[in-house]
Image 1: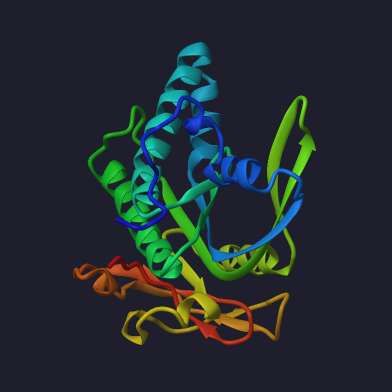
Image 2: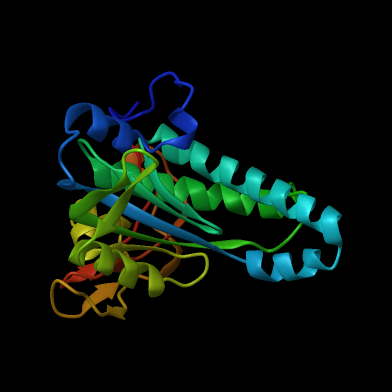
Length: 248
């Protein structure tokens, strides 16, 4: 079990990023922190068309949409939490996850692989309340991320991620095709070379154009001690970068 796996749930744990709680307990006066880790930006495609289709069914359609979202994200986030993820943002059909601690890149890559695999299982087994061809694109980038704790302590506080590292992550994810997992060169350098694929040019904020690996159904979870096929890719910050899924 990774060192950042969730402890037994406190009443507010499902609603507050673990990092926010740690921040307020240990550094209540700080408004900015730079933390080393791997950030994962996962975006699901297919919900927009489903929303439009269900809107024609009125309240029943809205309930079906809610049930589909609930099941999809509950299924996807379970393996991410097992690998130590901190859910920083959830907006509609996308999530932003942060992995810290030893081997954060390995755990992030493994979580990305498992998330995509479980989404495919949901679609293939027609397990969703409304069967629909959902697909996921996932970008990963490692580095020192600038995080800000903002808001009025009397009403609302939240963590905002800013700076060149998050811009590079965005560039990686935007270069991602549906069904692909792409890693920045920084993240790729932390994984075994055998898990990497070919490259695609990506504009990076912190360096010259980088490459993103985009190989269909390659690379494995060998870093995790298993063997399975997985689409892998890599992205910005100057060099070719690969994306793989692996867990110790």
